[in-house]
Image 1 (cartoon, one colour):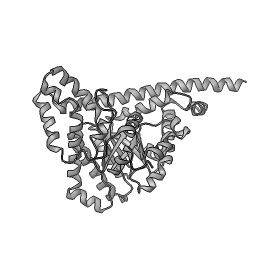
Image 2 (tube, helix red, strand yellow):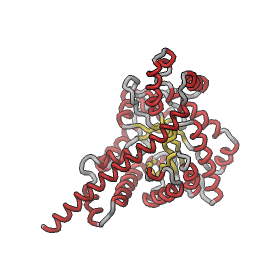
Image 3 (tube, helix red, strand yellow):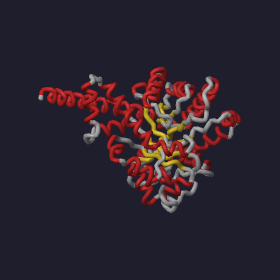
Image 4 (cartoon, one colour):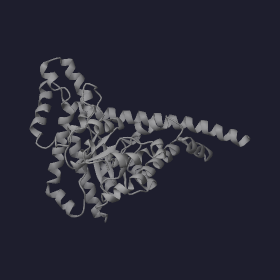
Length: 380
């Protein structure tokens, strides 16, 4: 573990779980992931379709498995399923000591259901069950998008005793619905006879994309009032989300679940890489420090925090009034954050679906090349 004097260690001491927002076969086979766990205090990993599409398009780490899959006659969907679940299983094994040391709270690796199912409740539930049973590791999260159709799937999957990472949350309204789906799922899990203690959940609240959507609107207004709100919306939105979380864990309904062994659904700050280079590259980490949350970072952000991150001071508690004023200020300028976050959800699903398509295309090409190599080898 990193020395206590480092910014990452101070962040961990403040109660923020440091996760890596990336995974690849190359990280696994070189020992890089294990090195990040040991040297930088990484205690979890998140993946998404974009991450897998990027990993498959680079290098030769998957060539051997593609040749095996081609020889076995695997189709593209089967090949993608096998490749991604194998990576997540291996990563879960790397993180298993963290899982054991934290009584199952951390040491988790997330894998997302096929994003083409984002509007299909039953399909999402079936996909989640298949991923859970195939990876077959207790320290896995199944990622389910927080679409309207995803909400009942979240409840149903939790009710089966499966740990869930709820992804693509942008709005406070939708986050409230996610917290409701989570508690209902645990209540159903208890009714189904499941031990609640091993069932973990996080709620991935996206941050930087909110500023990336709102800042251009502020710039277009060109007023001093608009300029004063630049770079403020995302952090205010996330801080208010933490306030909703606090309200839930203080409620009698949650206290009953906690008494039955349940762990809270931790807020997870996602999309924490800074998209506007005018902002500090640690902005969405340093300004969202509070105990009991997760911050999943791209490696560039992780390295930036390690080099010059903050002192670990709580920057969320006591900010409700200030955050509400930011949202109110946006509305006074004619910017409806609810409209923005609704559009961001649509764009988020579309982006992951497009990335999934790129992943399928990359694997399809890889299978064709592998089949040719196998055929050439057979004739020699």
